[in-house]
Image 1 (tube, one colour):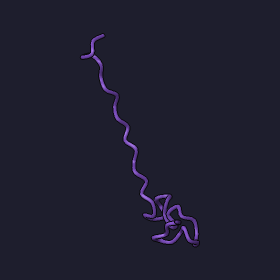
Image 2 (image 1 turned 45 degrees about the vertical axis):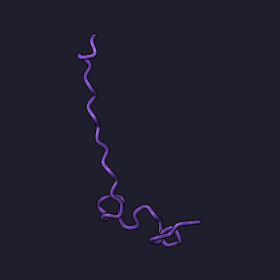
Image 3 (image 1 turned 30 degrees about the vertical axis):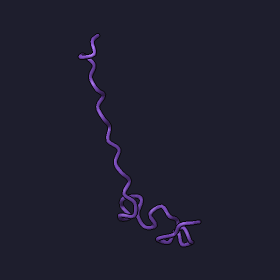
Image 4 (image 1 turned 90 degrees about the vertical axis):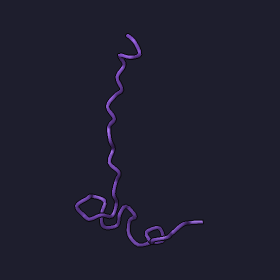
Length: 47
């Protein structure tokens, strides 16, 4: 077997999880943030 005979494996593409884009996506509504609370708010960063 030579180096020239080696073929690269086909690349599997993983889709990027699009959160909060409709209920039908499976990641809609709260978008994985749960309900209410500090961490559910936009711009929340714990220091």
